[in-house]
Length: 478
Image (tube, rainbow, N blue to C red; front, side, top):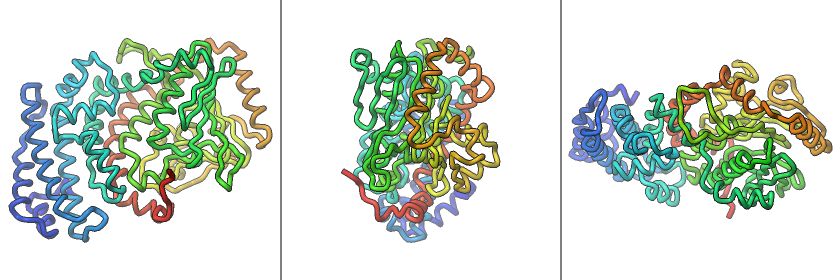
């Protein structure tokens, strides 16, 4: 294991890759000389962050002496892995020592609610070299496919994961991500006036007392990526903010794909083509689960942040309509729904094993529905759940023939809003108290943030996509 190696063993690995002795010694010396306190204060933060950044910079300079990642020899691959893991460990240890003074600086002593992606970009400005800048991450995405990325985003995973290890900090971060996006606030009056908002890959419409969110990333079978993420969250915000809407419905739009032409498709999960080509950033996973998905589950946070009080959120029931399939991220959405209608013959699955990533918060939530044994089968052994089967019964409320889906949705919506729904938010909160309190979600995200970063940038992910997705043959669609 890299973390259990001595510096002599690390040096041996690096020299075997042909790296110059003086540069290797300078890097190892910089890492070894970084003595961090158990719990640092604001006075020493900037100095230690600067020394850590210098050590990370020396490590990255070694990587730049080698070919791009996919072109490296075995010795170069091992050397590169040694550098990236140890540099990430440096960042992790700095944030572990200085989490509180860092977060206080970033949020003006907890008075500002800063989204997790903005926390990363702001930290990169305050402590240059400790985390990558937005420009650096975007430049890498423009110039390198996923297989050639060394791991700039690993530092974001270390940073966010370590912050969320601290209860007060993590809960404050959760609260920030449950606030409505400014874009939603800016267009709310127009949505209330027109009852329709075209957000590109997402369409949101108000019909009666129900808001309908349609996924329409047509060219990728309604897969999710960096183009869909923010529009989806804005759409959910709009439904939650609209005072006349009592519930929301998620449904896929019609697609043009030859195999499904003229049919609605719910979701193809994460866009594996764009992932393979390096176009999906690591922060996509964190923003999606702490923002979009958690808002569906918990609603919108109120202004006051009271971590030791019951959740105070503006929330509404949500229904999903599964047609054709709900793959990966689509299946994850079903786990936070209050009601699910499925077209007969459709299916859902979590092909994480074939992708090499962690399927969002499904590891925490899926066992509650299907039991841990079936959850392990779905997550680790590629089990597909057909909605007509007994195994899927705990996930689906209704299975109806294809031609009767519209009628079933209309009937279910009418039944829900017709009952008044006065206690819907209270009942949702009461269920979460025993199934998934906010602190349990925080603890999960602390582990997920770090582990997903390594999965996202692993060689295994690329190998899996090439083996199971024929990724080399797939091209980006303009």
